[in-house]
Length: 76
Image (cartoon, rainbow, N blue to C red; front, side):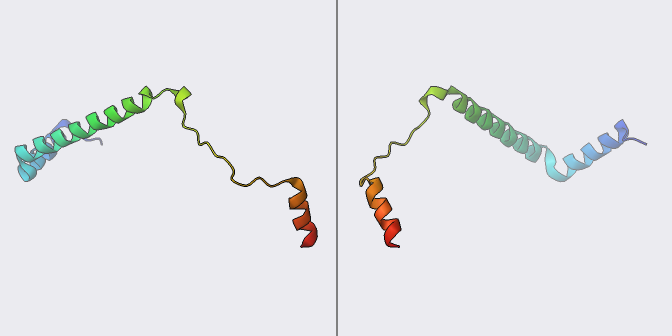
């Protein structure tokens, strides 16, 4: 037994009676705004080229030579 068209119509009428047409239309408008915002965010991510990947330039303040690091291991 599946859901018939009459059962769907009865559920739809109950939902409209409980929430009212105005509340449902406001809810659908909010959903539409959310979808538009989501699509806009996806398009903004696609516009950034892959070549311009952010890199971090790091310069070491103190360079450690191999001799100094070997001395530390021998002392310990």
